[in-house]
Image (cartoon, rainbow, N blue to C red; front, side, top):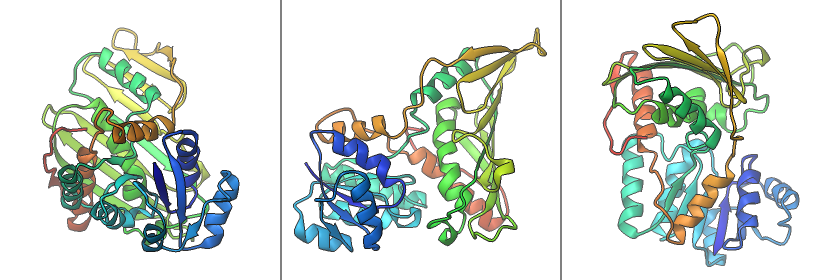
Length: 328
């Protein structure tokens, strides 16, 4: 099935490797406004024979495609996803689907009404290792849960991020929003968020703080952003969870520390059996869906948290989280 790669930045290599290895997919065109960027990724991924186009319209005129892979900057996701769906093409897109919930819901409905697959990357929330951590948390007992996640990235080359109004929220916290939906199943009710620019020259270094309250009295605190080496965490972040009778800590790697009330100073270490999977299984699930496989999660729960967080920043006040179903 002919597939167009729209956007050839750093993330594209992860997608192209999985797509090229699947016999159901033919990478038929690379689209990027900078030809050197497209040429570089083509040579790196063994696609020197694949034509480059400066924009999506030119590629669509030249290639009979069935799938668009949307790897454009975050604030362009919704525009190009809509464009592809209106051309009756399946869309695989990096997260988030859109920066506002209304637009995310419109795109989801547009895909459904046209019988098209709209796959939104969720490499953290559905990662097998993280799901093993989730199961350990749930095994500690029912909530309400108090969850904290720190997620700081050292990224010297900012790429498109300086143009985003809230880089830490729109390009980083969205991962944690996917993950928390796996841990806390109650409805989020209110949220307060703040994002603060950091005194760094790169233009994308900010720190975001988000607190979400849930209908079962659970609380989620997120702290993260793009910063220096001193704040850097693992890619999955550092997580701390309290239940009424136990708690745990996970540094994003292979070990979880479990704490019980009866011996709070003697945590037990649980070694995770499942390695982190990355993008590959999520991309394969998208291809499967095109060929009649299981339906994909729509990601609207995460979009609702992102929407509320941006509103909270703009108003400086707590806001209600709009409800979508199914959550997560």
